[in-house]
Length: 211
Image (cartoon, rainbow, N blue to C red; front, side, top):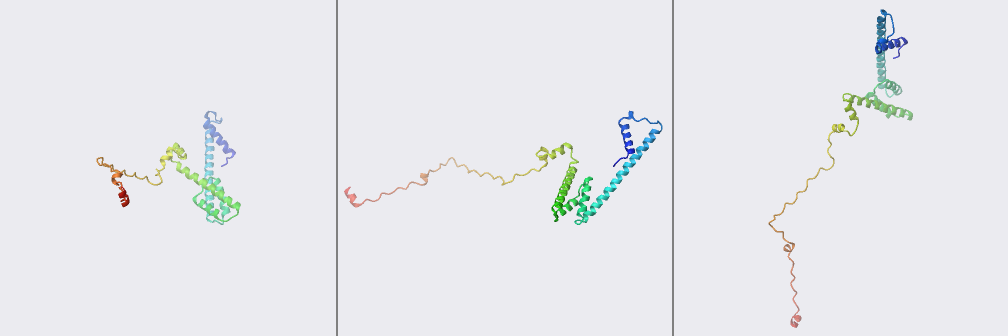
């Protein structure tokens, strides 16, 4: 909204009276209050009218943007122009806009037009993500909001669910053999497997006689 010279004079005078009441401009004691009140009322009416007109224009532009979006892909040029104008005015792209831009980006077109559609899609995705992040962080207190943005903090770690360790589960230790009875003696290998005694071979008869 652009103020006229008279409106700027009224705004300047109102600010001067609010900030410095003792330095207000001298005026006739009788006509001054009524004149100032009338100026302030006219300024308020002008501001309200400008706000209402801006709201009507915004509604008209959004309706026109919706009509061009419904007529895609034939109205791609007009839709992208109106979407860029709406974004410059503070419009947050809706999910329907993101879907429409993704559809336009997938259609065959020249390389410059493809780059233009890609850049507009990335810009809209960034705006949509920032809007969602701000809405989620709005009910959070300021310290909590800052901690949520920093990774590897105790607050962030507390919010994450406890993860179970991956891999095979730990195996149970093998059972130890039961201790043997101390009263029983362990047999030796010689007792288990006694040595085999070789029988002497019978001598020849001639050797027996000579002996």
